[in-house]
Each structure stands twice: as C-alpha cells, then as structure tokens.
Amino acid sequence: MPWKAIADPYAIWLSEVILQQTRVEQGLPYFERFVASYPTVTELAAAADDDVMKLWEGLGYYSRARNLLKAARVVANDFDGIFPDSYAGLLALPGVGPYTAAAIASFAFDRPVAVLDGNVYRILARYANDPTPIDTGGARKHFQVLVDTALGDASARRFNQAIMDFGALVCTPRNAGCASCPLAKGCQASNEGTVYERPVKEKKLKRRTRYFHFLVVKDEAGRTIIEQRTDKDIWQELYQFPLLETTRKGLTTADLAGEANWPAAIPPAALTFLRRSPPLKQQLTHQTIVAVFHHFRWDKMPEKMKDRQLIKNKMLSKCAFPRVIAKYLEEKSLLLDLF
Image (cartoon, rainbow, N blue to C red; front, top):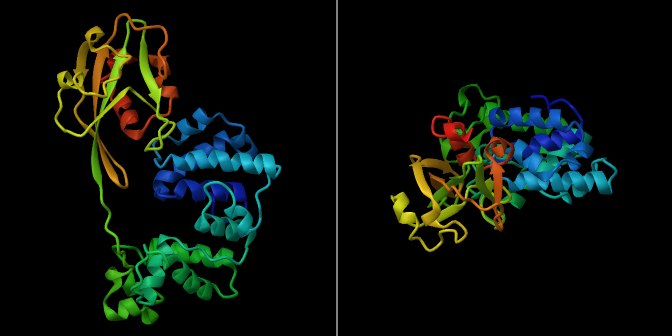
C-alpha cells in the first residue's frame, strides 16, 4: 500500500480517513485519486466543497469528507500547511479520533502511542481471552491499557504496523490462522477454544428500512431538477432528485401524488409519466434504503425553483450523488434520453 513505510503525515492522514469504515481494496483507488488531484494538504484545503464530495462519491459516511476538508483548512490556515506532530495536536483536528491520531503520530513521527482499532481489539481479546464487551463505555480505556502495556518501549511505528497487519492477515475475524500463528501457545482463547467468541459485543445492531421515491423530472430543454440534502441525516450535502420518503412499500407512481409530502413546487397535473425503475437497495450501517426512480416530463418547467436547481442533463455527472443514485445514473439503458 502506497502509504506504508513513509513518514508523510498528509498521506498517512488521508489514508486513515479513507479507510475508516472502508476496506483497503475499496479505499486504495480513492486514495490514489485524492493524491493525484490534491498532492498537498494546502491544495486540498483550497478545493471546492462540491469537487471533494464528488471525488468521495461511493465511499459513504460523507461526514468523513466534510471533516477532511475542515481539517485540511485548519492545517493550511492555522499551521501553515504543517501537521501537528503530537498526539494531542492531531486529536484536535476535525474528524480525527483517538485511533487516527495515534496512527498519524506513530507512523509519521514515531511518537510512543499505541493504536486501538478493530483488529487490535480482536487480538487483545483473544490473546487474553478477555470477555469485556468492546462496545461498552469503559472498553476503550480497558483495552488501551492492555495495548499500551504490550507496546512497552518498542518503536510505536513498527509495533502499530505489526499488530495491525497481524490482525488483517493472521488473527482474522472468521478464519483465524491459529495453526500457523506464532502467538498460539500463549493465546488463551486458542487454548480454551473460544477464538470465535472473542471479542464480545453487548449490543446488537438494529436496522430500519426506509422507502425513497425519487422524482426524476426533466423538460424538453434537457434540464433535470435536483436538490441538495441539508438536513442532519444521511448523505448530508449530497445532491438528489426531489424525494418523497414513505413508510409503506409497494406504492405505485399514481399513489405518490396523494402523499402529504409531495413537493408543492412540482404540480402533478403538469407532469407526463414516462417510466419507473425497479427498486434499488443501498445497505447502510443502521438502515436499508429502498429507492425507486419515477421519470416524468414537465414541458413548461419554470426557469428557477426555490431550494432546487435546474441542471443540464450532461452536467449530472459533475454532481456528488449518494451511491444508490449514482448506480441508477450508470444504468444507461434506463436513461438513454437523459444523456
């Protein structure tokens, strides 16, 4: 991986932010594109918000992209483009939590700080056969003591990389390599047959399903209505087509006009229905989005709309959309008349 074995805090910070909630194989192309587009933190800080959000499109958890820009601007404006070289200084940057601060501090500056991420929790819980739930209030402090003890006076740069690689390659969640593991003799979970019972989680993830009906409304001039999500919900600051969220599944296009949250600025009587898409799903951590796209033509669309934009169809590719909309736009067979 291009960010390994280097001491560039910008590249390390960028990689760590991208890899939060993202697998390496998915995040690597994004890292490469960001470095190519913005080789320094100062150049990233000067970027337009929409450009960065578009580059981030598809990675999800878009608050990371917003904090990426905020932190870049703090480093560029408050620290003359030089990253803080201490754990405390890094922790003060927007979007930088204890793990990311420890990773940057140790990998870039070899500060004596041990990282604590999902891999490390798993290794510690298994090696000590520790039943402490890792998703409870005191878990971080408890396991931080364990990993700090393990670090001792070793090089934090080497130790942190080693323990993270060990968790990614050997002590994996579902296929632990116990037969060839160099720590197997001292591993209490291995000795007691509880490897796959560690680490313990107390809370069970609850998901809800949301039904999104997007109104894809265009006119003869080749314009489509879009809007930007501004509420503190999923996909904040991304663009979308006008949306009706419903609590019922299986609604037809004809049913939508009777919904209370139909957009007042788009009169149903002025629309000509063209087609609707099959349902598309996007799985988020705590919710499942089921999206249906309803295509309409509006012959006498106004020149301006409050809180919405009328965008030339060929410019849709420049906007940052949620993954489910980007996926829909890629289905050219459904959208030949939009391009």
